[in-house]
Length: 213
Image (tube, rainbow, N blue to C red; front, side, top):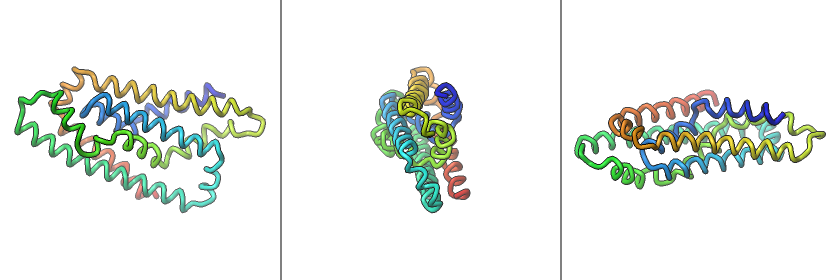
């Protein structure tokens, strides 16, 4: 049972989504420490969802569709907000690169990390994880066997701990790999374009949540 739960979650977590885009953007455009804080926020958000679902609160939300609908709207609006901020940051990065092309890449990255939404990476990761409306249905589907009366408590705990560890391992690996020197040097040459693409993806995902809500 646990092996199937871990396998299904791994397949889901490696699929690009809002969490992946946030970690990618922070790892490429700021510092490894900022990306790591976002990973911790995402892990805490997943842990909160698991507590909610395994604690039975999810059943109450399923009985009140307006709660699920409100969650989709909040998530969609937040992703739109991140997208707009990303487009603004891309414009700023483009102007900065044209005005000072010889600036040290590491210094520029740290300076950008201290401004805008990137100065609160933990909050961004946490809220992105909590506001993702697809998390609850997915967790309900893969964790359904663990809530049966004859399943011991340790199985539920093991499932929850394993899921959080997988999330931290995957997003941590992503943050570490994308923040290495040669990757960041390549990114610095294409930063405005990459920022715009990531911002547009977030906005498209947010719009889809609002429309389908």
